[in-house]
Length: 388
Image (cartoon, rainbow, N blue to C red; front, top):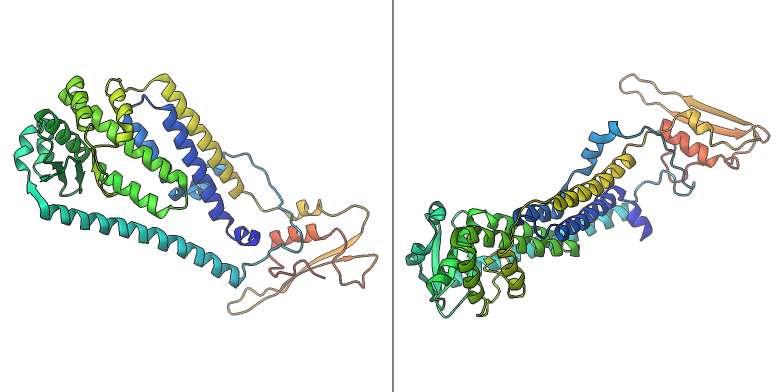
C-alpha cells in the first residue's frame, strides 16, 4: 500500500494542498460571521474548488521569486529510479475510475431525482401567478421569466431552476405578510443566481464524496445564501416586518426538498437567521485581518508546493561531494551516440574502486553518487540501478 501511494506524488500533493485550503476556508468562515454573507459564500465556493486549482502552474509562476537552491534527493539503491509497474498503474487507474463512477453516479441520481420530483409536483400544483402582486418592484424583471406554483396541503416554500425558474409556495400559507416574505425571499435567490451556485455545490459534494470538509463547506455555503437573501429582503420589506413573517413561517414544519432546490431555510438555523437580520453586515478591520491571515497561510502552502516542484537537477561536481573520502575511484562516462537521423546510440557509466579493478560490484558508499549521476545524465532507468 505504501508503494501504491508513492506512485502518484503529484496527485497526493494536490489533494493535500486542497484539503489545507478547505480547512483555511472553514477558518475564514468562522472569523467572518458578521461580514456580508455573499463574501463568505464566495470563500466557501473557493475552498470547495481548491482541488481543481492548477497549483503546478502557479508554482511555475512563482518559481522565479523563490530562493535559488539545489537539492539532491538521495534514496536507497533498491528504489532508485523505479519505474511504475503495470500492476500498480492498473490499480491506480481502477481507483480513479471507481472514484469518478461513484461521484458521477451520485450526481446523476440527484439530478434525475430532482427532475422527477418537480414533475410530480407540477402535476398536482395550482397556478400561482396571482401571487405575483406580492413581489417587490425590484424583482419585476426576474418575475417576468418565473413561474409560480401553489402546492395543495403544504406549507413549504422553495425555488428551483435557473433559465426558467420556478417558485413553489404552499397553499396553507394564507397570511399576506407571510406570502410576501416567502415570495420575495425566493426571488432574491433567483436574482442572485443562487441556483447555479447550488448546482455547483451539489456537484462538488457528489464528485468529492470522500472529503468530509467539502460537505461542511457546502452546508456553510447554503447557510450564507439564506443569510444573503434575508439581508436583501430586510432592505426591501423592512427588518421588523420581515423578521416577524419569517418567524411565523417557521412555526409550521418546513419539510426538506431534494438537493437541487433552494428552500426557505432550515428549522435548525432559524435562530441564527433572526439574529442576523438585526445585524449590520459590513467589512471590518477584523475581517480584513482574517482574510489576510488565511490568504497568507494559503500562499505559504502553495509556495511550499512550488519550491518542491522547482528543484533544479544537480551537477556532476555536486554529485562528486557524495563520494566517501579515503577511496580512489575510476569514474568514466562513455558516449557512443550518433545524432544522425535513424541512428541509435549508447551511453554508459562505469565506476570502479582502483584498489579492486577486477570487481564488478558497486563500490561501497558509491550508490548515492551513482544515483546523483543518473539524475544528471539520465542513465540507469532500470530497477536494478545502480548495479555492477
